[in-house]
Length: 311
Image 1 (cartoon, rainbow, N blue to C red):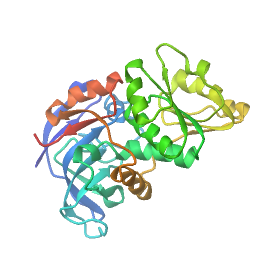
Image 2: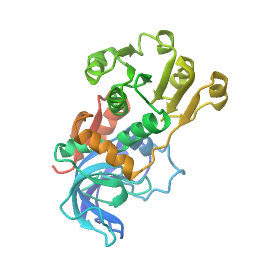
Image 3: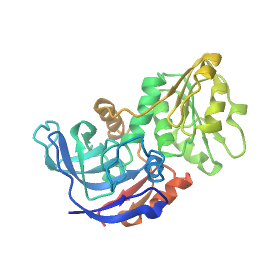
């Protein structure tokens, strides 16, 4: 048996309860990971409150937390890329139990070896946000040197990676965040910072090549107006308006993260080589997972929130 926090119903953070659950069974292509750290994404609490109900066939009770770091303790008979004892970074398929637990079973296709240069805490900040941004900017945004890029929510876990990746690619980067985060954004490499509380980004920038939207709603609606003809708008939060994109003569995409092993290896290597730096906002013990969700929901975390599983 293993210690885990899981939900048996949707609702406020109080629905996260401690359980003694069986250690996951290991399929032929799975590895069993003894979890060191688990990253918390906004997706976790969106699932917890029921936003995804009916869209994915979740196991019940459901263990949240789809980004983990840890050590491989057992491998399935068809696993070829990993061995017992390997320190790893992994992201879980959304219809399987996650990492608010002592153990997790993950298909080897979304598990990669942890570079020695990274701590387990840093490793848990990487997978889903890294994949999301990498695919948004590289595959959909087709980012290249000299592009002018706007990233919404620059101080969040997605924005932190996005700013660094865009600078690595040679882009000029503007980012939105509250004023107290502006120095932090400049440290990450942002060339221009916009205080979303005091000014409308659409009034201060125009003719950009790429916008990465993490907010949806009115932020997404106004983002069409700051792009030049032929620009690219990528939202990871909401569906795009195809008619408006056509009217503005821009490319617009709503992206859903593809759990792609090749991309995950590329992302982890960027961190391992020091090209991208991992930032975590707060490390909570597993017993304080409810408080971790509360902090995530407030939307002011600087980088990723991380759970420490062993206490």
